[in-house]
Amino acid sequence: MALYAAAAAVLAGVESRQGSIKGLVYASRFQNVKQLYALVCEAQRYASVLDAVIERAGLLRAEKKLRPHLAQVLVYELLLGRGFRGGGGRWKPVLDRHRARLKAELARLKVQRGVSRNEDLLDAGTRPGAASQVPRFVRVNTLKTCSDDAVDYFKRQGFTYQGRASGLEDLQALRGKCFLLDPLLSELLVFPAQTDLHDHPLYQAGHLILQDKASCLPAMLLAPPPGSQVIDACAAPGNKTSHLAALMKNQGKIFAFDLDAKRLASMATLLARAGVSCCELAEKDFLSVPPSDQRYQQVQYILLDPSCSGSGMLSRQLEEPGAGGPSRERLQALAGFQQRALGHALSFPSLRRLVYSTCSLCREENEDVVQEALQQSAGAFRLAPALPSWPHRGLSTFPGAEHCLRASPDTTLTGGFFVAVFERVEVPSPDSPAEVPPPERAEPGPAPKRRKRRRRAAPGAPPTGP
Image (cartoon, rainbow, N blue to C red; front, side):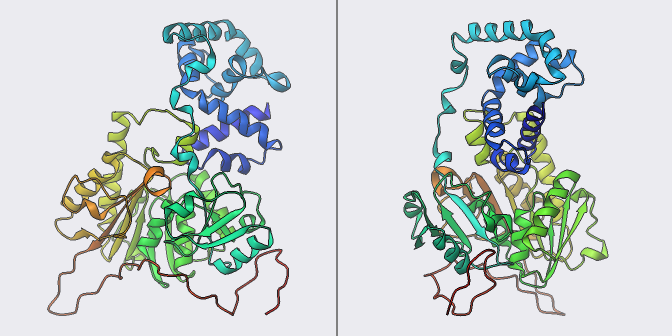
């Protein structure tokens, strides 16, 4: 029965954006990882079918103690899987009571859709698409090591290093045990798609962060210098927070807020493993944080990555292929929260620069939210041009939207993402010169020459001579 409870927990975690299926399976510490991963993937693949059968059979209405994700797993095993493993535990008698009704509803669903096999109930979109070809991006945690040392470690493990990529074509061509340095981010290594590094010692020690390239853009574009005061408004699960700390060299202060206690606890573990010491976590709704509080009077940088539909997440595109987009009602509710959060963030008195980002493909959560915030700010903020060479820009829904960035598997070989950079408009004062916002972070040129002086060696790396 532990298998089914673990599978239900992973499904719930994916739905609440705690991580991908693979990441949550490994984090579950379930002994048989392959068995758990296979069950979760299949239950997720048939989720819409299972939900329809469960709803029609009235299972959750009849069994009040049965939670939706556990019901999905159990009904999958009963109707589509191998039958209950290990006896099925205390839930087997419960499902047996509803077995006939559940089977009848599955049969009725097949008749309605004009199919005869269970697989035919799935949409044609279940075949792998562009999302399955996205490379594995790995951010080197510069709080613990450097790119040169990480590259050397992988080379000693038999990987072939192909230098800095010149463009997307190089990333698409990656195969086997080869890897590259990303053409844009000097601390980002790129491996072929589906490369699994969850058990790698550098990842386990916090020297590497498994983070999609698009997810690295917000912290990079915010670019808070060492010593800054920063707010990470909706911080969990913490990858962006650890990136901010690395850019700040652990100097200054990051105030990180999240309302979910479990996600915050996982984030604390991640930050500790990454060696982050400049971050103060708070289990608090960012909207309840008063901008007038003296503690935040020196905050000049805010990263706002609020809850969103997650329609651009690679895990959803891979694990829920063919799934429909969020409902109109859900989009409206999410956009309302995002607009309130962005307006609240822009009201902090010393704010100079803010990055708003989502892992959504929906205009309602992206350009529409940004446009509303600019109108409400009454000219106090403008959009900063971000990465002019980035190929995928914001939708042309208002003047200046081209300053925003979009990302997708098809155009940038990343997950689906949206980023907008706000900067305060300077109004010169007769009494004091206006502060100048930080310059746009330059896009890197040719790879720098290797430094002779090396940082701390990667864990387990054999000593090397000069």
